[in-house]
Amino acid sequence: LPFNQFGAINYNGVVATCKDAEIFLDGDGLASIDTTMINNGSSCSCPSLSFSLDISDFDCMDLGLNLVVLTVDDGQMQDTCQAMVTVSDNLPPFFQCQQETYFVNAGGFVELDPNDFVFGIFENCSVEFSLSQDTFYCSNLGTNSVVITGEDQSGLSSTCSTSVLIKDGISPTADCIDTVFVSLASDGLFTLSPSDVDAGSSDNCSIISYSLSIYELDYADLGISTQTMSV
Image 1: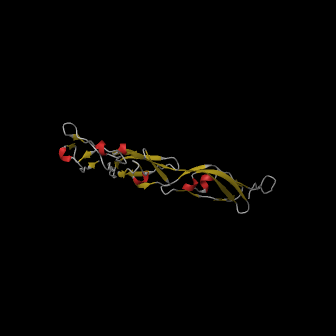
Image 2 (image 1 turned 90 degrees about the vertical axis):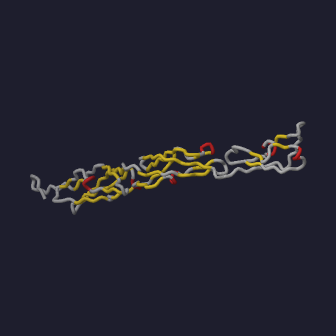
Image 3 (image 1 turned 60 degrees about the vertical axis):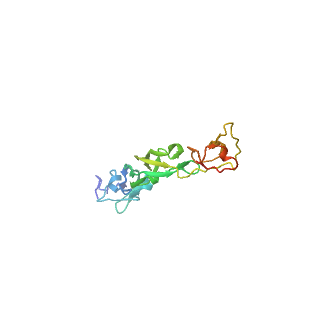
């Protein structure tokens, strides 16, 4: 040990000095520090010092600020100091998109799940997906373009574009009046229209057309005749 000018041992003790640090998660969502990243010139008038940290390994759960303690030990005495370690993520999510087909429901709409469109996902932490439009209606029948956004818990995001085919797989329901009474005109004819026999046919979207098996009635149809309406 060194001596001062009066011949006494000059032992000033252990002084721990820390500095803050920032680390970035790797592709597996892991990161670590060692004492050299935190030690900021800790000192002691002694032959050697040892250093240790209370926390050295970090993952996605540690994103943000983390308090760590550095312990400096000379074998007889020790001192500690604290530092803030910022755990960051600079890797945006990566994924690919595929086309999908959906059918509108009985209410005339369908809600899309963005997870149906993505594959080949690479993200070191967690990622949530969203769609530029997630609800489609009968007015959207056919092919529609959508953009999928993936955002991780650090706010980093990526996008990809694809298309969704909206279909209607529910057939319309034809509803007819049981009995329709009509009278022939002076020329012996009557022109029947779908509105004469329709009792409120329905569809989850809209009915495009109505048709009847017979439109023109004459003397040959006097009495009861059976008609068929198609929608």
